[in-house]
Amino acid sequence: MLRIALRGISAHLVRFLMSLLAVALGVAFMAGTLSLRTMLSTTFDGIVEAGANADAFVRGSQEAASANPMDFAGSSRNTVDTSLVSRIDAVDGVRVAIPELSAPVVLVGKDGTAVQSTQAPSFATGIGPDDPTATLLAGHAPRGPDEIALEEATLEASGLAVGDTTRLVVDGEVRTVTVVGEMSLGGPMAGATIVLIDRAVAAAQFAPDGRVPTIAVYADPGVSEQELVERVAPVLEGAPTPSEVVRGQQLRDETRADIDEMLGFMTTFLVVFAAIALFVGGFIIANTFSMAVRQRVREFALLRAVGASPRQVFASIVLQAAVVGLLGSAIGVLAGFGLVELARAGLEAVGMDLAGEVPVTVTTVVVCVVIGVVVSVVAAALPARRAAVVPPVEAMRDEVSTSDRTSRWRVVVGLVLAVGGAALVVGAGVRPDADGAGPALGVGAAGVLFGALALGPWLARVVVGALGAPVAALARPVGGLARGNATRNPKRTAATAGALMIGMALVGAASVLAASANASVASAVEAEAHADLVLRGPNMGTIPAGALADVAALDAVGRVDPDWWSGVLVTSGEQTPSAADMALVMGLEPGVLGGRCGPR
Image (cartoon, rainbow, N blue to C red):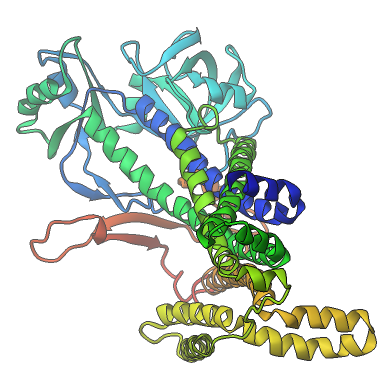
């Protein structure tokens, strides 16, 4: 039967091309999603390893509000005092303790414009001669306020070279600096613009109050992370601010978990999209094998006549579906890796460099191939069963009686789903603010969709017959033949139309979602923002006070309304604050609310 199944495919290869394409497209999206997810995780894991490679970290032990309104994490930890650095350095087994000193900056490139890659951060960080996080590639480490070094990718993106003079905007102050070195931070930085400055300068600029987010602690050779934590912990007793010490691996794991959570939505969305593509492909596969079974009735009857059992006939068709699924999955896996390369090129074009090559893992290949084969086999199972139960004598006489009538139960179920779904959709549309309106709308739309699929054969006979009547009358005899072919087997027509219907439903849903999002954003902007021009600092930072004064002095400017944002943790009683208690506080000049630029 294996030889018969393979010869059936080779003899009717064109017939199976649509099924191959359907499987290949769905598997391509699946393989591309899994590979892109792996590549993004690898890239960010490299960033975490390079940026947090210490053996232990001293950090605040209490949650605190983030002062950055764009910090979607909601809250951070309290800062720690830099006076702890000297205490930690004196602990036995500590090689060096380095405070985290970084802040947003703007680097001016060779062309006189800011070096910035889409939404990737642009920041400066302090570095010293004892810092193990950076490797000098050219020149020397920065010394004093007028020297900087650049991370290797930043140096390339800026167009600058070691020895060039440029400008650096720090806290609204424009400085003229010289690039004195090129450094590597041990991994790709995903398009971030990284400037390295002298640690003493960074301490004075970024931590004038003597407080930093964390202190990285590096151990002497032979001292484990746990031993280092146990030795440093007593030093933190009586610290100026609540502090704790954690293993470096613990901090890296927490950071990776946060990144995985952020990437999870994108992965879920793409996987669902791929699953829908495979689901639609299942209709095409089932329709293809249904037509193939009808056209090969005599062939199957002959197999039955020479001794083949129904199980063997069934197995031969399922085997053909498995081969089609296997070939389509193989093509889809290769196409998926190609899609990842295109996505990678697109991300690199906007400045986000992904690490390494496209991850061709055994797990990804096996999962995608198994899914493609299973979808193909399941889709072909019903046509295979129909072929297996056809009596050989009846088939040889070409008098096969296949029932094209739609079962009464199918019509009843379809009507219940369609009518019930339509009622939920109408109810959600009439009362959009009611409790549960959103879920009701989703369930109703799904009910209408599945109801239409169940009613497909009945609708195909009625609707196609009515719509095809003018064509049959005006385009004789071709129109009549086309109409008769479509209505002769309504189940086949419904299966073909079902795949198109699902695709159009997805397109319509995406279009409505995009239009709704655009309308919501436009409405919010129109209602809340009445200014003619909005100024904002680089990296969502602050605008220098001098710049505001210069803008207000322009003849064309009638009024300037600065605002300030910050975060606070709001709790009641003795409740311990958490990220859920994060609230934004906005500061405005007197007269803004209710004024010309305020809400109407």
